[in-house]
Amino acid sequence: MPERPALGLARAALRPVLDFALPPRCPGCGAITAEPHRFCLDCWSDLEFLGDPCCFRCGLPFGFGPGGEEQCGACLADPPAFDRMRAAVAYGDIPRKVALKLKYGGRPGVAETIARFVERHMPPAPEAILAPVPLHRWRIWKRGYNQAALIASALARRSGIEARLDLVDRIKATPPLRGKNPAQRRDTVRGAFRIAPKHADAVRGRTIILVDDVYTSGATVGACARVLKRAGAARIEVLCWARVLKEE
Ligand SMILES: [Zn+2]
Ligand SMILES: [Zn+2]
Image 1: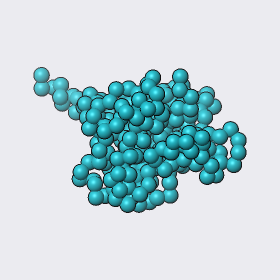
Image 2: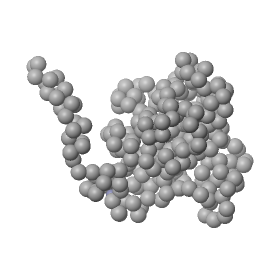
Image 3: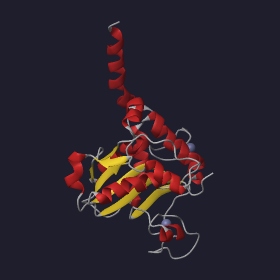
Image 4: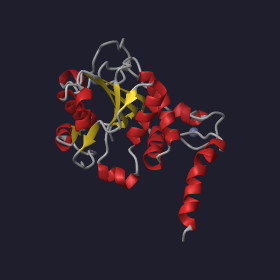
């Protein structure tokens, strides 16, 4: 039937216009809001924003204390491969819903919302390169996009910092890390990543800002950070939407 693809194309062409015409909705619950990229009051009051005082290295919130350049016990005992990690919010019901909307809805509007909350943690490094934590190509093929790449693109648009969406390559599909201990997680992701050869020269001496949606144990970003450091990156920053504070 020749009409079908034509209709599909027409719909695709109309979508941005329709999105624009629809009232803005809360990225958490879908309630209509006054302005785009704003949470409704209920969802907003449920969000736990992260920031100082926290571990200088991994951003773990400190209940009290000066913060500053202090590091948490875990970072002192076993320093992560990255130099600094920050997330916008603590993982919970609403951040999970937002992350799922991005992951399975692929809506650039959600990535833009996330970028607005993450960007206040951007390091002052205009010469840096933004790079998403990659998905394995089978998963991209199934889903059509990588949610971390959508966030990295939105951050690049907003900050003017260069993004290289295929900088890190996932060469091994890895099983979920849930339920594994830190050593098992590290083993699982070992050898899973490499720097795409065409970007190898660009990495040397640069600050790389790794972007992901949810930070759980740090095993995945840690593995990416290790290959970037090995390739000569000067500094690895990690930016995420939500950080798991307590694993169930
Ligand atoms: Zn809401
Ligand atoms: Zn720490």
